[in-house]
Every structure is written in structure tokens, then in C-alpha cells.
Length: 133
Length: 79
Image (cartoon, rainbow over all chains, first blue to last red; front, side, top):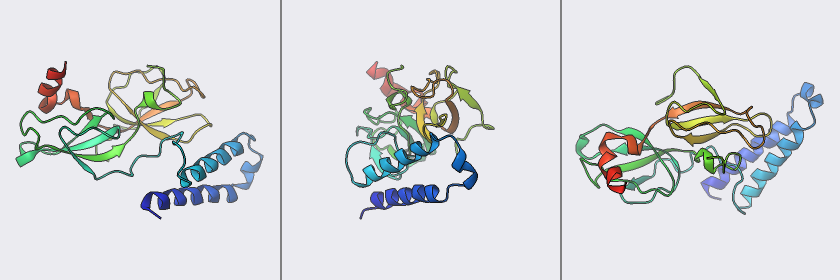
């Protein structure tokens, strides 16, 4: 079982815990709350089976730490730490869009590196917001 | 947290994003909070499910690479 599967299983277990430990006073809350929770559980189980594309994106930390070179394609939209060569500049963070290419630095050219800090899908590529640009 | 915004400023659909970065998106009942990338100057969109009840909070600010002084030459070449 790989790390991603283990993390998903933990999420699923946590959600199940929320169902069984549902506060009593909320048992009489609007009925539409529970179906939403069940849908989310189903969604997590679906991911555990490794089938299909996730409807909603995960919090986006699973690929953090990977480094990329100038010229490589950006595989995940999000925040990247930029590591310049020979310390001509201290590390800083930038936002990159999936599908773009990591650019060379004007000072240290293709010796610059990019480290993934946090992924988050572009808002207009999210199912709840797409086609609104 | 590095790059975090000043005291939690909540934005609504239609507001202009003051910073590029990752925002926490808060829906009304139908979906848990999640993260999304938004660029400075873009208008926060409404949600297809909860409409204008959706809210946005800046979680982590970062410059768009095209706006960074060390990468402007490359972006100008592309234009």
C-alpha cells in the first residue's frame, strides 16, 4: 500500500468516525447534511479504489518537496519555492499554473530550481467554478 | 505562516483578488473548505451550487512568476 493510499484510507476512516460520532443534537439537523457526508465518504472510497478522476481536489500537499528545472512543464498548479544559484537572491515563492513551463532566471539562467510547496487547482479549473472566466 | 495575509480578510464572489496565491474557499453547506489558486486582479467567481454565498480567504500569498523581476525577460520574450 503506497503512501497516497494510506493517507486516503486515514481520511476515509476519519470521515467514518465523524459519522459514528455525530453529535446527538445534530441528529435533528436538516436532513440534507447527512447525504452530503455520505457522498463524501463514497467519494473517498472511490479514490481508494484508484478509479477515475477526483471530483474535488485534495488539499494538495502530496507532491511537496519535489524540485524541477527550468524548461520542465509545471505538473501541478500551486506555489513553488524558487531556489536561485550561488545565492544571488534568497529563496522566494511564486505561483505557477499547470501546463506552463518553469522559466529560466534572468540572472542564474537554467541553474534555478523550483520546489513544490503547495498545490491548489486554479479556481477556474475547479468543477464548482469553471466556465466563469 | 509564511506568506499569510493580514488578519483574516474574507472576500465574496465579485470582489477583486488583492494578491496572487492560494485561497481557502468556503462553501455554504454543500462542500467542505478547499484550496484554490487565484491571481491578483481576478474577480472571485460565484459557485455553481451555493452562488454568492461562497467566501474566499487568503491562505498563502505568492507572486505570479510573470510579475517577478528575475523572470520578466523570459515572459517578455514570450509576448
